[in-house]
Image (cartoon, rainbow, N blue to C red; front, top):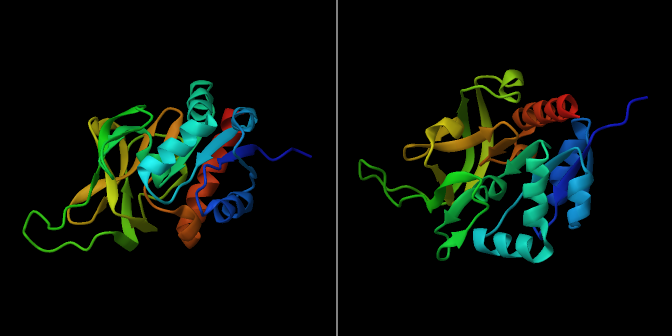
Amino acid sequence: MSVAPSVAVVDFGSGNLRSVARALQRSGLEPQVTSDPAGVLRADGVVLPGVGAFADAAASLAAKGLDQAVLRGIEAGRPYLGLCLGLQLLFEESEEHGRTKGFGLLRGEVRRFPERTAEGARLRVPHIGWNEVVFRGRHPMLERLPERDFFYFVHAYRAVPADAAVVVGTTDYGGPFAAAVATERIFAVQFHPEKSQEAGRRLLDAFAAWVVACR
């Protein structure tokens, strides 16, 4: 009997860890919720979920040594799935509550949605609810996902990548924004797959297959 791949669900004080872990387990993975850097490095894959403020998350990760563990895991070739803040933290900095440095793995910054669209219409912030994501590009995850799917979002800030090549999914809310970004060992989304029913299950199944392929 084959052993299910292990994934470290990085615990830096985020509130939705258990729901993320349950969703990963339904996709055939063995999630380990951990605040131990060594536990992150032992796993076959790394999941960084997150709700809350960018600055608080960055400070908590650094205080526990989890930021360096995540970076070392990615450098070692472990597949990384970032959810919501787990996407935003990949970038150089965020303007939320003052300028705060991120991991700097991807060039660009995190900015708040504008209060009005380019046409002058008021935009409700935060962006909450279901919205369509259009995927494009090449990545092992995308091979198992439909070109379009609807996911659940809750966020007031969004990433503005400096390199358009890393954007593999877009959503329109007052204009297009990056809903998914990827590199060879990174796939991160602004939405919450654990709250996105069947669409979320498809995405986590794709992540599970990617982790298996990289073992």
